[in-house]
Length: 300
Image 1 (cartoon, rainbow, N blue to C red):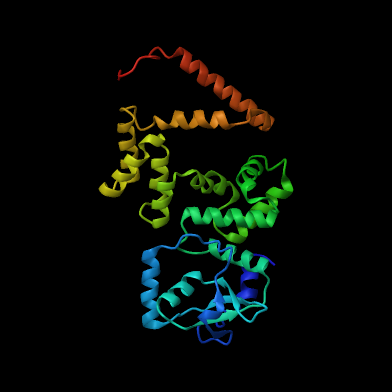
Image 2 (cartoon, one colour; image 1 turned 180 degrees about the horizontal axis):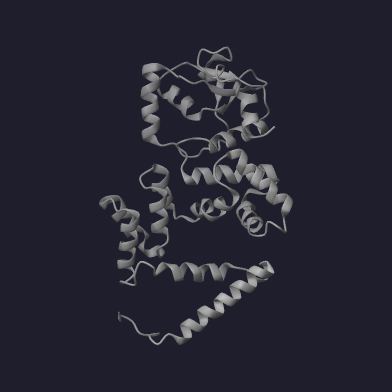
């Protein structure tokens, strides 16, 4: 059972998901424990405060989902924010849909549901997707990024695994395997303070990426400027170029290419791609050797 079918089977019909629907019942908050492996790790304090205020005024409008435990209590499956807000609001009961599923199925559902959230930031999406891939493919979580990159780059050599990954992204309904490798995984390399601003919603992902493209020693200065001066992405690029000594807005491109070349295992590339890349590198080498201004700086 996968994706939307899994969600529909476990959560019931839309009518059952309403607070007063036939599938919901009131449960004591004291009998509900949070999910031990909650895939959502960051909760905005501002957002949680707003939800708590709403719960005090109107109650919990959408039931949480729980699963029964042998001792008569319940384990949360979906609705961590609603559960926290209900407790903060001082409620003693909460509407819940009870589904008799195992811990593994509950985690699969929570991970899938996590990728569907409208307020999901890129880091949370990447983490939830990596865990889904780990569980679906049976790979250790720490190996997933490298294996996904390899399979995306060599899909013809790994047709079965590539097909499974493409099918998973189709179920998620958010991007593709290639897009995830080229964009989604970049968030895993962000510094802690850039990641914190992204998770707090203080800075858009495009701006965070623009900052991360600069040398690490300039990240804090660019972050401060972006937050305090409200710089746009182009403004960040311009400030970045200024910090780099007027080398121009395109100066980070050679640095990125050089890093990619250092990380690339040429012997693992498909023959046509490797041959084309070698030809291009020979052209670049020739252009650099023929540059009459090499070694000179500050000339226009």
